[in-house]
Amino acid sequence: MNSTDPFYNKHPQSTAVSWEMAEKLFASFDHYLPLNAAEKEDLVTRVTERRIKRRQFILQEGDICRHYTFVAEGCFKKFQVDQKGTEHNLQFAAENDWIMEIDSFYNEKPSRVYLEAMEPSVILQINKSDLFTLFTGNPKFDRNFRVIVENRFVEQENRILQAISSTAEERYRFFLTQYAKLAQRLPNTQIASYLGITPEFLSRMRRQLAKR
Image (tube, rainbow, N blue to C red):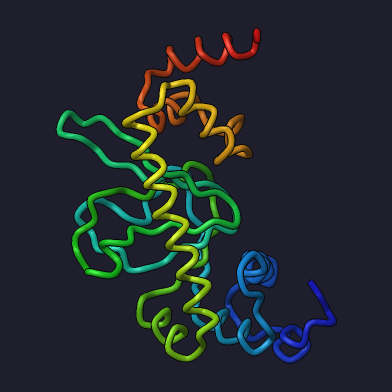
């Protein structure tokens, strides 16, 4: 805890969100436009802390996405299930990242994807009403969250382009760049699903790359 921060000095026990998780949330905005003490107070009073078990869903297909979710601890996957019942991983989100289903959230449409915890996790969530209140009350929040959403769109666009024109090895190398901290943390089955290959092919490719 930063005892010199005016936020902490003024509100030592004013929120249900733990200080450790609040600090992680505040620090994540340092990559965009950092928050001052008043902005931290406004944000933290609008988020809810939840502890999520491994394999617990925070969104299922057919439900409406009601929150932007910040991953303070743990790891989540976004995936879709095809007509044959096969899961296709679309995105991973670990510590200090955000995950949501944008179309469902903004248009209140039934979700086409699932959001599932891959590990015991701690998340901070903000609903649409509180998020829009932040947007209208402070342009900094509007800008910060706009960049977060734009980053998600860029990630999805890159994924689509790779599926069309990249080899499995090229997709894997990009995965190592984008999810460097998750490469040794995720099971082969989950990485293979993201890459659109079988776990056996991924294992062979990894062995071949290790020999080079």
